Image 1 (cartoon, rainbow over the protein chains, first blue to last red):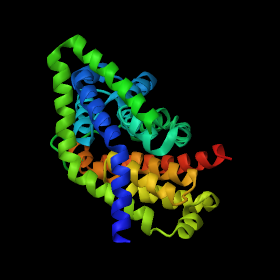
Image 2: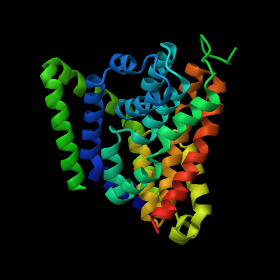
Image 3: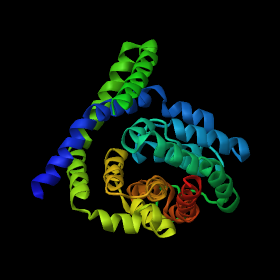
Image 4: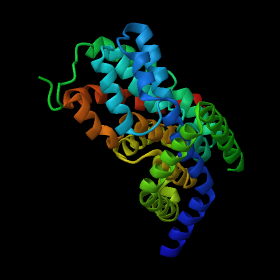
Length: 148
Length: 161
């Protein structure tokens, strides 16, 4: 059983090795092509429906992990974007992330990926809109920690 | 899998061309950044694939089909969503794990709830979020995003019929 599990994992990894290498190359290239400064310029001071729409699209285009997009979201917030824009950006990054899409198709298959996209398609605009309405007055603390 | 490799290779080629249009250095920086990230994630990746191998071999198929299979309905969605939400890992680990659970017989709606739960609620980002926006923001976001993860599973159940 021990050997069987190892062999099964190894077989999956061997089959997916090229996919993983390509997915990392895509993330690296997107990181140099979509610069944080460009996204910040798009989103600074945006609010309302326009902010929600552009926030969600910017989330889809932002590559990388939370160490990349949270500092960026905070910079956008500090430059005056509404809370709706921030929630739409985070939801767009969560479910519309384009850099992650090839990996999802590779492992889950095109059918299940399409079903997942259909089921979460409306989440970024809806969550952005509701987040802006309900939590629009939230302000990030100046240096981390609890809200003053 | 070979179709997926071709699609990814095509995307890589387009992005490389775009980067080269800016400069050779931009393209080189992109590849270097990707290689560094891969090197940093490699130990975790190996562990994840071994874990996924064991999930496939050790999880009793009858149990998975009963609790998470196509007939599991709302129970499968809630369990799938919660399982996705507690995973602190990146996509290179979560997708192989989801594929392993799928191979043992989990239903599509359960898998959509699992992936959506991970995407919207994953614990892996909470430390970064609290450091940037404060815990008050995290509670608000979780309250807002959690129903969306369950709704995604419910929608998948309806769409998949």
